[in-house]
Image 1 (tube, one colour):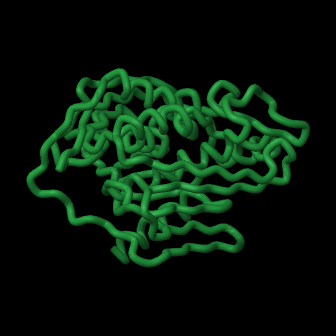
Image 2: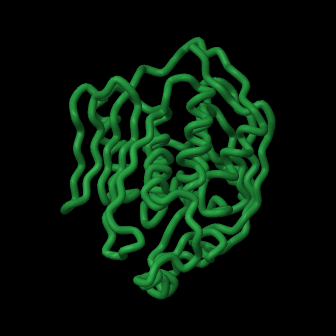
Length: 282
């Protein structure tokens, strides 16, 4: 059985969406079986935070991981890129508490991974497989997430907004088994989709101490009149970004079980509840 790590290091610097603080991330090759994990190199003893479901400490408008008093926020886009591009093991060094938003998508991360390349790694003690034997559903009002037994790993998402420019959108993406094709599919179909916000919510979120680093350069903004900063990269870019978030959150399982992951009007909180239920049932 093979795993993969990076063939070379990656470095990116940028502003965090919620903190507005500039941080640098260095992603380094890691040993087989070590998984993906963050290292807070700005703190004494460089504490390690594993990218695992058990480490989730907050899910308010992003996913935050923590261990003790140490945390790292808005990890979902970077983790989606690593998982979507086939990087099983990675040491992610960061000199602050929030992953840079970059252009609001995972495209820069995915392109950097493709440029660095992957190195195969043989593992002698593979993890026990996580399986989805029966449908698993998590519901909150009319929003839900589900994992359904399937013959392939697929992510399907639906959103529904009152704003006409967004409206009702659905998209489905299949993570094919061939690693090269999977990386290309992810980098072309999902990674470029940017985070989006609603113009009428911006002032409230800023007063709540959130989106301090958000701008028209790193997020799409939609108003009742339409998109404030077009053009879109896809006609349904918002729902593709929700798939990006779902891939990033479910990557905390370590690897994706063979299942159809289905979500509608969901959130990081529901994504994580699904991952927790998959682990509990698996």
